[in-house]
Image (tube, rainbow, N blue to C red):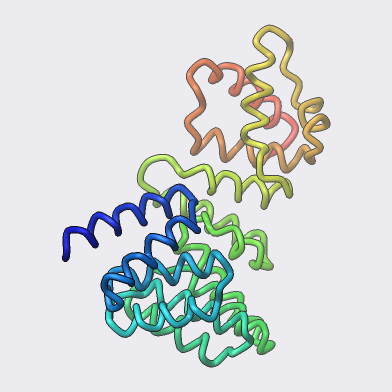
Length: 253
């Protein structure tokens, strides 16, 4: 790779990572003025143009990226999204399936395939695909979770995730679990804030539930998950254990 092009590409990647899309696009234009067939930049330009909502040019660059790189599953996935948004479902389906042939773990493909099946009134198949997407995302893909009709199935996927995942589950998983149980995503943070603020005063499970606007049974279930799988800050452990005990007195979970 030409050293000048390599330096420019690194600048593009930095600007893109910082969210400076227009600047990244301008640098890519400069790259293509030097070498219009600079293959490593095709996919990146496609992604930037997608975020800038320049969908026609985006599609052209993604097609070139996919043509030159047989392993580029991400460009094929994004081509699928473009076709799905144009209601060209067969083209979209082909893109998603081709992407999955390259990377069967690319969970968003299953989500979009579920949307396609749902639009075709094939609800059982759609549910199967949403569940597969959510499981492969290890509980992190919010849109897949929202599409799962059976709350118990979604909770089983969370249980499987917590047992499977190495290390601590990311915040997105806890936000999704909170949303599933309480219809809100920031409840874990609010529980920890409550414990911090009650260093000396009495902890009250019922009042906490009321102040959060969360049903007691949902809050109790969330506390059960936290007790089993969340690393409570050391200074809050004793207060959390008291809160959890109060919840267990009222509900079995």
